Length: 126
Image 1 (spheres, rainbow, N blue to C red):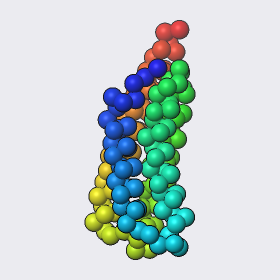
Image 2 (image 1 turned 60 degrees about the vertical axis):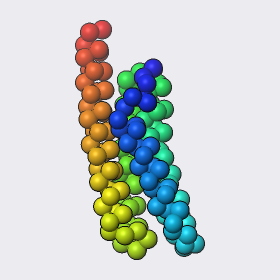
Image 3 (image 1 turned 90 degrees about the vertical axis):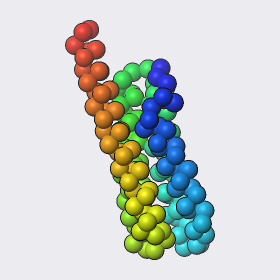
Image 4 (image 1 turned 135 degrees about the vertical axis):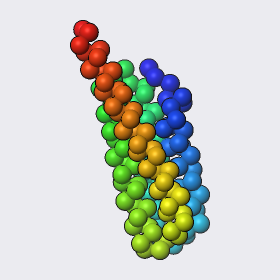
């Protein structure tokens, strides 16, 4: 089992989710409810899947959950752009959140590569 709490990507994902929730609280438009709810869920999903994957026994399972996390990050990136284009968030808010999100996506890609490499190395040794 891995300690997900030590991963910077997990810490950054938690902080991003908190930031998303703080921004979305200020938007109380009824017609925006569906998009905002989806954004909340996607932001929570990133960190949650890192944690869930870290609790799995195999590297394959961990890698699977990291892929789910990056999928949620891409989903959130799209939703942020839509929220900007609709006018629910400002350009400044969009840039701030999107910059954090891109950092997380890069960290997830790096982590997937590391987990994949270590899994291939351990498979060769068996």
